[in-house]
Image (cartoon, rainbow, N blue to C red; front, side):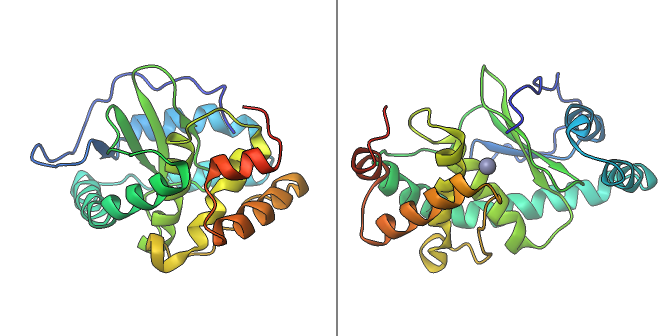
Length: 211
Ligand SMILES: [Zn+2]
């Protein structure tokens, strides 16, 4: 997706709970929010780019609001993370643990890049949206984070279709993906196979995807 983005530098304000059992850290940091935007905006066409930039520049998020949101988002995620890791782990045929060295930056735009290389891995999550939509984004990005092998872009972006097993994943938004016909073809294949109880490995083997 946005693999050319550089990893943000050191975070200045981290609002995390030291007693938290998850290793996934949620952070709102204004500098990081703008840094990620700077790496992203060239790919966004006008006038959407200017509208979005104005939107995030017009209002500063107060530290009180940021702290309250981070606490809420963490609490929401902690409640569903163990089940999510179990269910995704069944599909990937791996035991998945809460991620170490992974940060979720809360941002106020609508594109959610990630960087999953090196020591400081991160992804972006919407700060102001419904819990329902935020959960979809977190789970979508974590499908990529935990993906056990490198795959073509269209296959990678198709995998989150399994999140449409809403009650199982406790994810109640429609996970539609991108308009790309190749991705949509893969979404159909993966969804149908997933419903028959097949794992990612079964599907790749059946479809002759080299790995
Ligand atoms: Zn994606």
